[in-house]
Amino acid sequence: MHNSNSSNPQLNLEVESIVAKATGGDTEAFGRLYDIYADRIYRHIYYRTSNVEDARDLTQEVFLKAWHGLSRYQRVRASFLSWLFTISHNRVIDYYRTKKYHSYLNNEIVMEDRDKGPEELFDVKFTQQQVRRAILQLPEEQQQVVLMSFIEGFEYSEIAAALNKTEGNIRVIMHRALKRMREILDKAEV
Image (cartoon, rainbow, N blue to C red; front, side, top):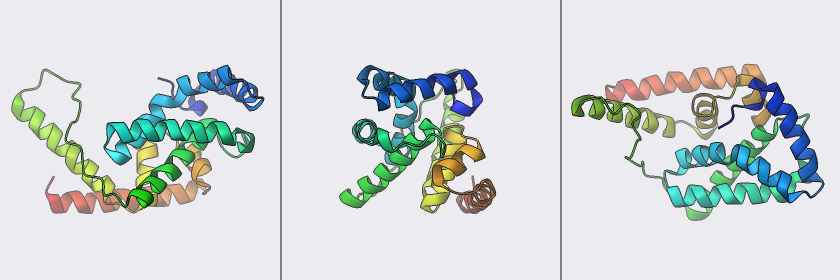
């Protein structure tokens, strides 16, 4: 898995070169972009839908849309990854609009620390579920900022570029989101 472009200048240059080739119609170059970013886009969508099959389908749709819209990608405005996240964000919104679907939380959380006892595992799983529920109760814009920052590891500058906002605006949105999450979690007594 690769980190965001800004934290890896060599990857950033490599991606720019690959994007240039893909823009010229090179399907192998676009396949390389898929290899670099598909897992991150899938995780982002899965977190929003809580459905493995839907997340797979939507990930494919995001890359198909990116392939068809590659000529409209403008590197100056955002990194390629930020552009993909914008497409995935819009696709998830469309998904919920067309399905009129309410996402129910998936209770399966993968635990990395298998040495914990059953009570500890339950406590960790319960806390993760509560945090996830709190995130999903936030307004759409706040959800997007929290997920991009904490789940995907984007810096504020990258989030700002992806969402066409100022970095200061992203900080305000994050502050409000965290404040609201604290309120939600306090009510749930987590």
